[in-house]
Structures are given as structure tokens and as C-alpha cells.
Image (cartoon, rainbow, N blue to C red; front, top):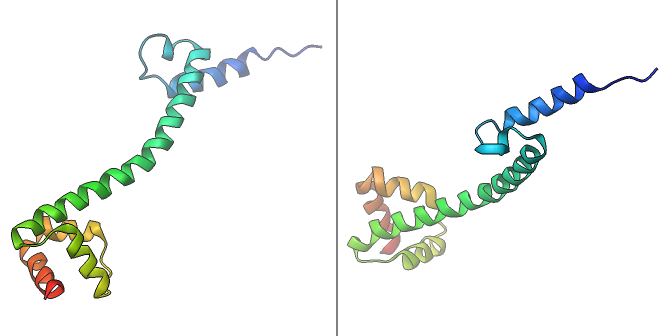
Length: 114
């Protein structure tokens, strides 16, 4: 006897449609287009996870540069001086210091640049 797979197929398709429920128009109602939307969104998510890392690094660099300019130095000379003194502090922490603890950041700059 032949087994009809209607219920199983419907459940699988229902899960796919549920995952794209926020999409506009046919993208959340038609299974075929919903599946394509999911694949495309997965590509975008993968790409943008990488891009987010780049974006944050750019932001940290900008913050460090903006905090160090009034002290009479620029970003590249400061980072170079850090490397020469073998001070291993990442850009995220430098940025946090510059924003939230400007006095400590200034002390660090004075120590590194002397």
C-alpha cells in the first residue's frame, strides 16, 4: 500500500514558512519562495557576521584617534609606539579607556609616548 506523505511534507513546509514569517508579500506565504528567502538570508547573515567585526574595528580605531589627537599624537604613531614597547592591549580596550576613563587613557599615552 502506498503511504501518502502529506502531513509530513506540510509540517516541514510549515517550519520553513515560520522561519520567514517576518518577510513581506509572497516570501512568507509561498513555500518555494520562502525557501529561497531563507537561503539568501543565510548568505547575508554569514557575510554580515564578518562585516560586523570589520565595522567594530573601524569604530575603535576612530575613537582612539579622536581621543589621542588632542594630546598631540595621531593613531598610527601611538599604535606603533605600543608595539615597540611590547604593550599588548587590544583596540577595543583602548577605545573603552578613551571613552569611559579619559584620565587613565591619558596616563597610558604619556607613558607610551615618552
